[in-house]
Image 1 (cartoon, rainbow, N blue to C red):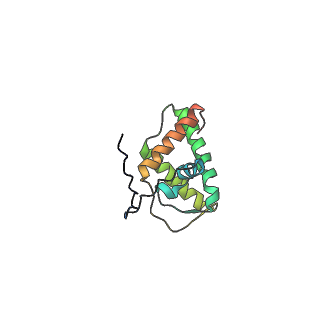
Image 2: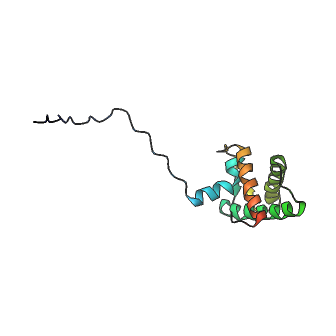
Image 3: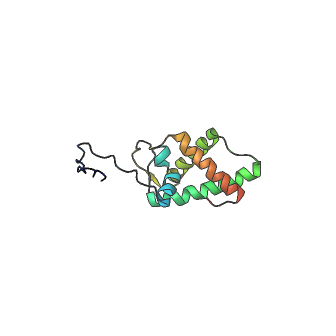
Length: 126
């Protein structure tokens, strides 16, 4: 006759389980890509209007990229975006709040802009 296995109940662990990473929604990713607070720490108000302005600016840069025949360097994009953010405030469309610590480094944010601009330049969806 086969031996029966003795089943012992599992004890609850005294260590807390690590939280499962939360998945990003498309809206969160879109906000990350179209808000300077994430890469620069720049807070522009009204915040809900910032993404549309960034998307318009990306489209302008894509048109320019097509006309010149090559993409922007990260340094060029950095200069362009910083100038753009300043112009939004100086033009009166936005006010600048207190800066916040950026969540990602500026280079990563600009690389994402490079990709988005390249897709727009090729006529691909972003």
